[in-house]
Amino acid sequence: MRIGIAGIGGRMGLLLQEEVAAAGAALAAGTRRGDDPRALFAGSDAVIDFTHAASAAGHAALAAETGVPLILGSSGLDPEQEVAVAEASKRVAIVYAANFATGVNLVLAIAEKLGAALPAAQYDAEIVEMHHRQKVDAPSGTAVAMGRAVAKGRGTTLEEAGRESGRDGHTGPRGTGTIGFAALRGGQVVGEHTLLFAAASEQISLTHRSFDRRAYATGAVRAALWAQGRPPGLYGMKDVLGLA
Ligand SMILES: NC(=O)C1=CN([C@@H]2O[C@H](COP(=O)(O)OP(=O)(O)OC[C@H]3O[C@@H](n4cnc5c(N)ncnc54)[C@H](OP(=O)(O)O)[C@@H]3O)[C@@H](O)[C@H]2O)C=CC1
Ligand SMILES: O=C(O)C1=N[C@H](C(=O)O)C[C@H](O)C1
View 1: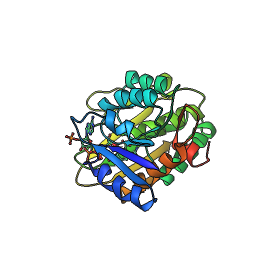
View 2 (view 1 turned 135 degrees about the vertical axis):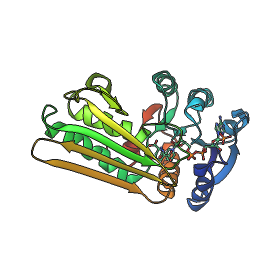
View 3 (view 1 turned 120 degrees about the vertical axis):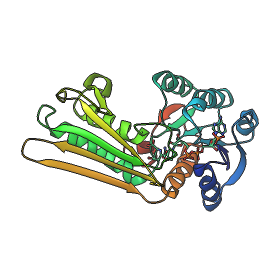
């Protein structure tokens, strides 16, 4: 199988090259910012994209046009970009995941269960994440995915529940049922996420720490192998892991 890598010179791109080889697949080609991605799709059986949110819609459209599955890891997509990805997935298999590490996807499954079990009026859900100083989007895609999982467990959506992000100044009291986000940036932290449920008399916290980006790269290559021959659809890592 030939796997193409968009963003081959990035932190993830460099590790993805190693993981493609470790999986016994062939590296088809790679692109850097400014390269035309058409040749990448033309010469690949699947393309892995860890670049930037701004590239997602264009890469998804090319995947739909060529029938080459796309493994999309970029974070910080806005609603319009997410709609474009969903539209493209009607014509090709796209695996879009905020986090390709196995442990995070298990935490997401638990987050939905906790959201369902703990009444929103009593248990305030807060998500704290910390990443390296180079990260350009906040809150992280994983933090948003955690918020979406909690909201789903509560029978609602994150948009309906309401987000409280980056509190500062005279914010007023916390909104009941909202989901709070705090983003820390510093040093070379690979990725840390804590989901908290705080009530009047108890608190639950669930933390995931990534020590090595290889966990994401291994998961993304696994998703590329899994996506080959799949019918069109928008898949997540829980499909790849059999957690759906
Ligand atoms: N889902 C997951 O499991 C994970 C997701 N991520 C996400 O992946 C993305 C990349 O992360 P990371 O590798 O750390 O970031 P980097 O900035 O190290 O790498 C991204 C690379 O992509 C390049 N690039 C930007 N636009 C394009 C384009 N259109 N075509 C080809 N290359 C392009 C960048 O070039 P330039 O430097 O010139 O901008 C850069 O070299 C982020 O959105 C991050 O949040 C990261 C880890 C795990
Ligand atoms: O930019 C990163 O580094 C990461 N981004 C993803 C995110 O936004 O959740 C996944 C992981 O946390 C690392």
